[in-house]
Picture (cartoon, one colour):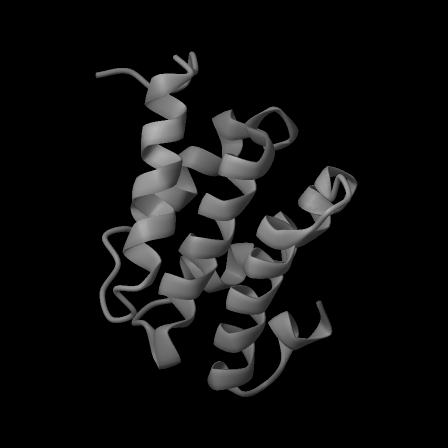
Length: 115
């Protein structure tokens, strides 16, 4: 998690990707850590440009949280920031995680998401 605040954009980007994949692959319930993760990736989602794909990897990280346990994500607060960070601009491998999250939200008829 400390890598998400590193001074180097590449470290922040790789950390966002790594945290998301770690949560996705976890064999335990990682949702107690979701708020800390969201607070840490928030600045990456809001920064201008896409240094070292850090916006993209942060968006992918949030997408993985949503798919893992959308109930543990404060969607009313997170979705506007997450959507504003889209579309993926450089690291198109993150498209898969983002599309999965959007489909998950629509499939599960989340009140915060409508057609």
